[in-house]
Image (cartoon, rainbow, N blue to C red):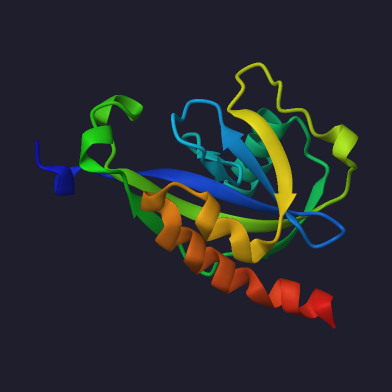
Length: 160
C-alpha cells in the first residue's frame, strides 16, 4: 500500500474557550495512553465546515452553547503513524486535513455532557492554551503547536 497515495480525511477542530480563557480538552476513551485533545471530527459530504464544527461539538461534548470568534487561515494536516493507518477509518486515509475554529463558550460547566450517544471522551477539563501540545498524542503535536500559535492573539487580547 502506497501511504502517500491515500487522501486526508476532511475534518474540523474546535478550540472552545471558557470565560476564564481556558480551553476544553477531553481524554480519549479509546486510547491506551493518557491523551487529551480538543473536540474534532469529520465533515460530512456537502457539509459546511462551520456547521460541522457545531455538530461535532454537540456530538462530542453535548452542547452547542458557543459563538465563533476565529477561523484558521488555512487547512492543517497531520499524518497517522503507519501502523495505525490500517486500523483507523478502515485504512482509507493517511491522516486528517483540518479546518480549526476558536469558539467562545457561552454555557456553564453543567452544560457539558461527555456521556453522549457515542462517547469519545472518558473525562474532560479546562487547560491553559500553552499546555495543549504537551497533552495531545505525539503525532498531532506539530498541528497543535500551529493552531495554538495562530490563535495566540485571542489570549493576548484577554490578558490586557
